[in-house]
Image 1 (cartoon, rainbow, N blue to C red):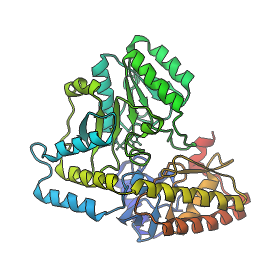
Image 2 (tube, rainbow, N blue to C red):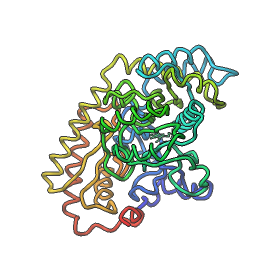
Image 3 (cartoon, helix red, strand yellow):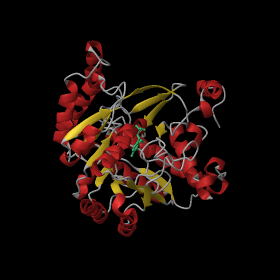
Image 4 (cartoon, rainbow, N blue to C red):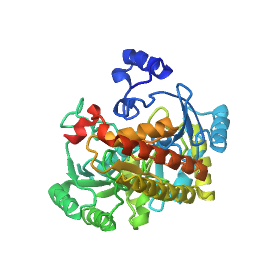
Length: 422
Ligand code: PMP
């Protein structure tokens, strides 16, 4: 139940009147356990405070943007210094050139960069560049993969026309046969194969990319002249200091980036290879805030830290400790917990839990103990987390598993998740 008389409850009631549906997007708490806060007041390091002042160790990291820690002094210092000098101006500063140089030096396939604001800006531009490059229309997407909230890729039908989704063929991620059939169906009209770097769809187990699938996607694009796109908006910098498909040895033509490369400051990017440069110069792409200098200063500082620190190895080690510790504790409690995704982007689902009643109960138990986990979306680790934080999370998990085991017979159906079980 939403905590009665809380600041959160008061804000929710006011939001109902002035914000459609009370809140929009996946940042709405509507599909979370009822006791989850909708509103937050503050964040620092690996921690968040909700609107009522409760401190939470945050395994969502802002849905990804928090890579090094909230309020990182180095990154925020670079941001505020540039803000004082100039941010939104009549055009860009020298930082845009420096940032493009840094990103193309870091990402193997990339020879150029265009900076924008949201992940969806970058994925939409990838689509345009591929169509401009090939002068063809059809794109292949993996069923269930998320690429943003624009009409061409929106996950819900309201407000979307069949024309918005025209010229798309869906295939099954990691299924070579399904990809080949989609390419055959596209005939001579294939503009792009859009690939998620891994299967990180909501509500289901995550899966790493099958190297044979990634290699076949590359081959088919080479054979047909289509462009291969990897959407690294979510996984970027949590799998590799390069495009995430570098771990399977496959280089795309285009990759979309966002969320975390300025550690929470608003900037995203489309990176591309030489082959796609002319098309990228030909499309009309801009936004009032795309040239802001302060987020670029923040990005440059974040990328320096990405290069010079062991942030990735640190979150991989913490993630491995978390995974092992949870497996042991779930086992000891006699619960079957499936942990999938890279250890830096974990997702936890209980066996035989179609409406997530076990997941909701356990997540609420974690929340009560000051740990914010998500019952159906992949989570994220950040470099500000410590071994002590993981130990805290494991202690909470152990108590939560025990409580879940004791209450298994009495769990109530989760009505709002009934659509999953249907
Ligand atoms: N692609 C992927 C893989 C994403 O996870 C997201 C955001 N969750 C997007 C694109 C869209 O990014 P944004 O919400 O910043 O537009």
